Each structure stands twice: as C-alpha cells, then as structure tokens.
Figure (spheres, rainbow, N blue to C red):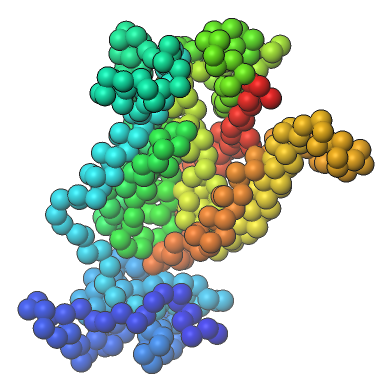
Length: 460
C-alpha cells in the first residue's frame, strides 16, 4: 500500500484562528470525525493519522455514499477536515483529509479582463485578414494608413480601397463575435454549472495567440475538487453542450454566406501578382460538418473538384466544432475525460492508451503524407525508387493523418496525465446522466476531424 492511499496531498496545515495568529487546536477533532462517521456507517476499524497519511475509517455505509458525504462534510469541516470516500475491496472507506476546500477569492479579475481584451484584438485581426478582397496582412495595411507610406508594402497596388477596408473591418467584427461567442459560451457553461453546484471556480481565462484562429481557446480553473462523479460530469458536459448550442447555428448561417467553387475559380479571382505565391487552406471534414454542408447545399462536398469556400463566420463555426472535439477527447482532465470518468470510474483510465495510440498513428501517417507531397522530382530521384515506393505506400494509406496531433500527444502525456479527483468516489451516475454521457461520446465521433487542416501552396 502506498504512503498516501487516498491520493491527496495531506501535508496541509490546519486553518488559522479568526485573528490569523496560530492554527486552531482541535483536541477532540478525532472524536468529532469518528462520531460523524458513526452516524452514516457501521465502523469496522479506525487508523489514526500518522502525519504522512490521513485518518482512515473502514466499514459499511448505511446510507447512499452521496447522502453520507453530505451528512459528514459539515462536521468534518468544523474541525478542519474534509471526508474522502472510496470503496476498497468489500469495504467502504472514509479518509479524513486535513484540509477545507472552497475558499472563493474576491476582487476584480484583472488578469481575466486583460487576457480577454488581448484575445479580442488578436481574433479581430485574424478575422479582418479573412476578408476575401483583402490581400495584404491587416497590420501592414493599418501601418501604411497611419504612416501614410507604402514603402514597406510589397505590393502597393494591392492596398485596399476604403470600401474594401471597411468591409474587412466588418468581417473582423463578425468573426470575433462568432468565434468568441462559441468559446465564451463553452467556458461559461462550465462556470455557471460550477456555481450551480456550489463549486468555486475562476472566470474564463482566454488565451490570445496569433495563429489561424487568433486564440488558443479559453479555460477555467477549479479551486476545489468536486464532491462526486455526478457533479464533475455535470460541469464537464455543460461546456460542450453550451458551445455546440451556439456553434451549430453559427456554422449553418456561415455556410449560407459561403460559396461553392473550384480551385481554378479561386485562382482566377486572385490578383495576378499573387498567383503561384498563395496557399489554399482546406478545412477538414467531420461527419457533422459533411452533414451541415449537405443540409445547406443539398449535396456531399467536396465532390467533382468543387468544395465550399467558407465565409469567416462559417470558419468560426467549424472551429467551434473542432475545439469541442478536442475537449471531448476521452482522456484526463479534458471534458471528455470527465464524461468517461463519470461513466466508468477508475476504469476510464483504460481509454488513455488507445486514444494516444490512435493520435500517434494519425501523427505518423500525416507526417508521411505531408513529406511525400512536398517532395520534388530531383529529391525522389536522389532517394531511389525503392525508398520512395515505401514512403509512398505509407502516405497512401486510407487514413486522414495530421502531423500536428503530435502536439496533443505531448499535452496528454505531460500535462494531463491524471484525472481530476473527486471527494466521493463511490457515488455513480444516475440513468439520465449515463444516457447523456453515451450521447456525448457519439457527439465526439460525429465532430472529430482526423485531418483538421490541409495547406496546399498554389505554386507547388
């Protein structure tokens, strides 16, 4: 048995007195804890704390674990402890953790506000750059307008007219509202459900980043463990459900603003100076995205060399589905991890290895596909026909790989190794939550995109 079988940090000092001087002395705290436990369970044995391990009480609960936890918690907290329920073999076990959780912080959340402001700017800039008649980077155009000089502009003739610039700014606003509306609703779903269950959590932290979306998303931080799997499940699914409630209509509206066309038509609409120097970014297809395109356009796309050239609002909706799918990966502290932990308890750890293996396969295949696609004739000749045939065979596998899944493998292996603990590990989900959990796994399959983005140089 490990030194800390409960899995919690037990080296936590007792709370201070109201005047903040010295820790409260609880000469009878063990009696209080023992008496509280005796009200809900038939006690077999008690092991007192030895400093490294918390007090342990083993026996058989006479109430449901959920009811027992709620009954014990006030008494435990009155003496600076919190109950932690587990089932070990045929016995129910209560550990008295020497800590009281749930202390909410007060004050103005300046960091949240600052990050939100920066994210608004970064997403807005990306949205402006997605306007279909703006051919120069937005910051380059803005600098030229402020300085009154186009000396640093590589193609001065491509400077937008005032009408195009105003339209691009409007596109930036629409994209920002659409994308941050989805991400913000997702995180507020977590936050409001946490508040509903009385769990202390931070407001969303948005992450600005000058990538294809303009942000790396947003997160909230839980300041305390959840009481049981029911509560953790509710908080976990609230985000994806809320986000999808916004993402799906945003996607459909954006597709209505989009057009269907071919690559040749796209090239024909480009200024002559950019032909051969521009790349096409193709968004990947999930089952749900294919269905959305079918609903709007009445056919499966891409087909016959045609695909949807999506409006920035549609791109925001597509990104909302992608972000939701990433969060629903059934691993660790992701939303999907909360779902499978709620459904299967400790058995949810079995999902970890298959998920990582699948992502590694997608990473490797994606790398070979990109590598082979970028080879020039002289490089193929230099490596030899036999080597190239092997590489080509791997790249030709009917698997839509993506090399950037490797980043997610790293995140799952290093940053999300363990699942967030709960205080009552015995209580299971009720039938309605189980049905919703299974439905969320189906949703994950429908919105997961094996190859999210493909960037193809027109000159390649």
